[in-house]
Length: 158
Image (cartoon, rainbow, N blue to C red; front, side, top):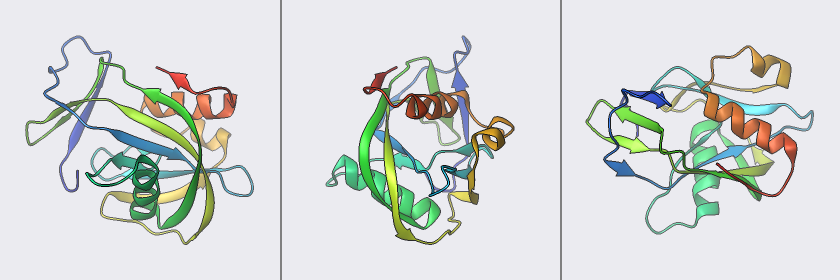
């Protein structure tokens, strides 16, 4: 949601009740050295996997490809599903009154082209090692997705 600030609530009893559900996706995109592509989100300042909401008329893989391109400048192909994340105790409250329950499908992707670019949805884009990621300000849900990606097992349902 471009230009609208948000607050993430993760297992917070006083969180507002959700009034929206949007199919969303994110991507784990490693480079040739195994570093993981992240963006610093403009709406909350946290580092995150690239991703966003699916548009009407597009496939889910198309959503992932579009979001990675829009937010980072890179082109990817979708390889596999890492997991499906639908924790009802994880909601995003936007300043416009929307309170969205998390529903996200995370995919592992292969980098196939493009070049690094910062969009209006991000303030920075970079590749990071796992040790570097450990020190970044990042929502716990994205750390879980990276951990699940590294496990390289059947898709997780969380």
